[in-house]
Image 1 (cartoon, rainbow, N blue to C red):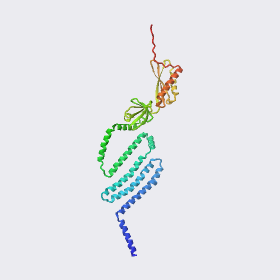
Image 2: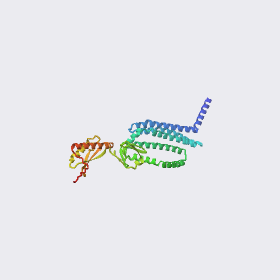
Image 3: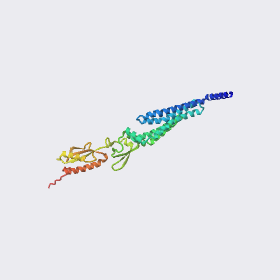
Image 4: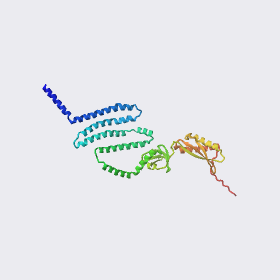
Length: 355
């Protein structure tokens, strides 16, 4: 019996000695943080996620899915950081251990953010572009710039955590940036010109535009560096965006896709002006490429030297059909005037010979 009591006292003494050790407090602290992390994990998974599923907003589900794992990992790493700070470690571990834990906390948020940006789908970008009226290319440009910014900020943050002096690095980066800016000033001008084109949106793909230099064509591509238009001769013209941002641009497709054309017509004096007016309007309405709304109009413009000058005004469904429709209307006008006996005068000189 005495031996048993001795053994019990010895076990109790050893247990008290064990519990009195400092590392037991650290172990209890870590276990406490683990329990807290599990509680937060259950709250997010069972409560917040279900509440988000009840709403019609999809972004709250994405936010909860994004922050779930980083929050849990952050709580766990905070437990290790608490122990690393309270343990009064000797050099160099008093510097390495806390900073290593801080780096893990930063990575627990940084990696999910980088992965989220890298996994963004193009169709989601297209949907956002349609809803916000922002060019799709500009949206993806900003997304790529954000990715680069996140990477740079991540590397700078890690260096700051480890107390690395960044002054020489920033000085070198400033000199290098100045050299790059001088060497690539034309490219930068085109880049910022592209940004202004995307923001102002003076034209879009499939629009017909006329530049102040005289080029006319359909916009087939809008890039960050240049804009490409295809002329009616099927010639592709590439124009730097720095020029497009400062050029006078006539957009024949805006604000509506239809385009008005004017067809001048002269008739002889003595013609029935009402009949001519009605005939011109009917010729325009008979053409399939001419819109019925707005309705074609015929106007008397002036009394010319040898004719009464009319002007047929009508709207073509698409600017690309401008030349073809004018061709068709002129042929139809000539045929209709010949059938109705309406004379289209032309300059004539009568020479009298006096004998």
